[in-house]
Amino acid sequence: MTLSPSPSPFAQPPAPGGGVPELVAGSILALLGLWSLAKWMRTDFQAGSGRERMVYVLHVTARVGLWFGFAAFLGFLTATTAQSAS
Image (cartoon, rainbow, N blue to C red; front, side, top):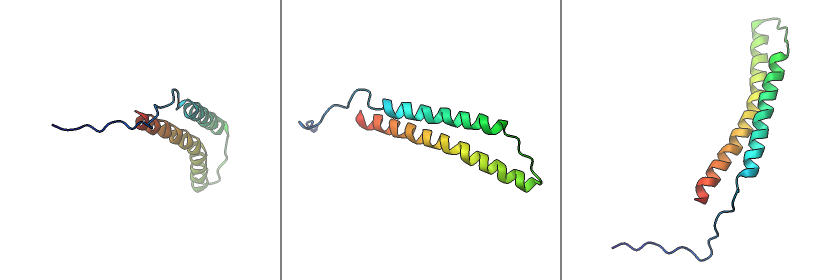
């Protein structure tokens, strides 16, 4: 016979819709990432050599990737908050 721990009288249920602000902010950041990708894809860069082209591609990838990274962080934050609340 095992005894289950009794719930704490001080525990509060999770707030309904607790992850909504993070989801909204994450969605906005993801849209900014798509906008940035579209903007940089339209930009014409006249590279003098393959090395300059590679540095430019790295620069664009970093700029666009930051937006997606921020959005992914907020998505991860929302997912972990939802798991810890249940």
